[in-house]
Image 1 (cartoon, rainbow, N blue to C red):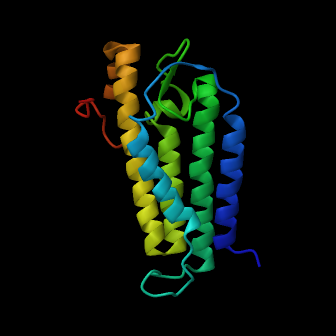
Image 2 (cartoon, helix red, strand yellow):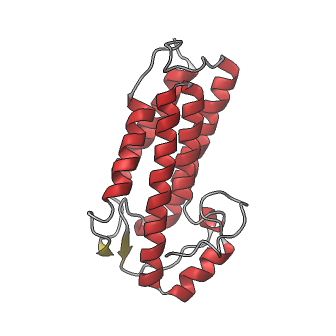
Length: 198
């Protein structure tokens, strides 16, 4: 039987497969942050993904399961998840060959501040955080909420690393002007001028 619970995981699977394939369409890196320096966010994010999307707690199993979602709100959360992952794809397509799965600078790299990047500085992470939160709500399991929280923390850490790196690579003036006028992860949530790399 097709249920919101099954469909939400199919959407994640389709997104992940398409994302891996699209990784082939990216310019080579001119400079990158060492993988060692990126290890913390990778570990936190991977643990979050595992808890959110791999660990399955049977519905009603105590104490790991908090609630069972009804169908109507379940389908709404499926739509929110799809919208979050769609927002990721909009940002990915808008970046084109400047996209990278790791923190890098590409040849010809510049500040992208149009499309979804006019709404937030890290729309891919924003979309993934939204999709993760909707998935956790649908699952109604402690492991899902822990996973979504860890994913959000991992993406926040990665965003901070990227911002320090891009400020140094692209110049404080160009990147700081963008930071001052565009929120980090949540559209409309103030400007992040005080949220300087440190």
